Image (cartoon, rainbow, N blue to C red):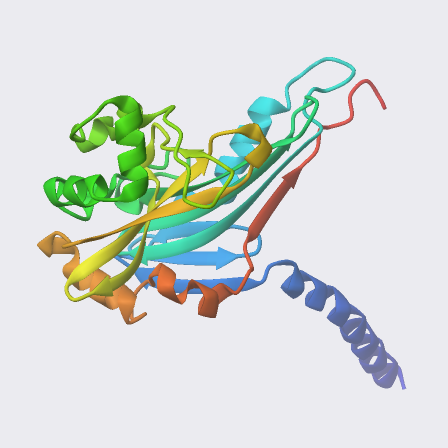
Length: 284
């Protein structure tokens, strides 16, 4: 009878733990996981992270970046913190070899008359990153700079910014963002204006491969506060560097990584969401 009692108790305990296990499983839902360029990349609703396949070392974590930014903001010793809420939603746009591209949508109730928000693309090279210091990578690492500049200069939106800056040709890629910064871009039929950011060469994702060329999409964030959080894209087709063609084809076929063309199928509208609010101070 004692054995029966113990067995029943164990069964009851196991059954009681099932909801907890289910809650823990539900707490982090994997959206996509794969290996590319020697790195294991995991995208869940809690983080976008990457580990080196050879030794398991973490080389990237989107949550760690957001945590660090919030830690710097949440240091106001005043009784009434200036920042009331900070939130970031991150989506993985493409994975090509060791290069990952993200979309960051950030919201901040920073204590002003209105909350602020912004959306941008940002690409990182895992091969040159650590969890504490991610390495933002330029599109020029994937495609020849001359071809990319030619394609950008032919784009109507970029041409608007060039005219505003009095440029007849684009400067070297590393200086494009600074040269065009502050020049309003207004797509036809829209009231909102957008602008090229100083970090423009890193604000890209690989969308698809077409006839031996890669379609790159660059983000242009809002230029006026009334349009806060809005973003448009500039798209160009450029022949890739020979050394990345195999990685692009693997991503296009979803054998290793993926391209933005498949994002809807992979993730729908899901993303990783990080939400922060000030700590209580002074015993409140």
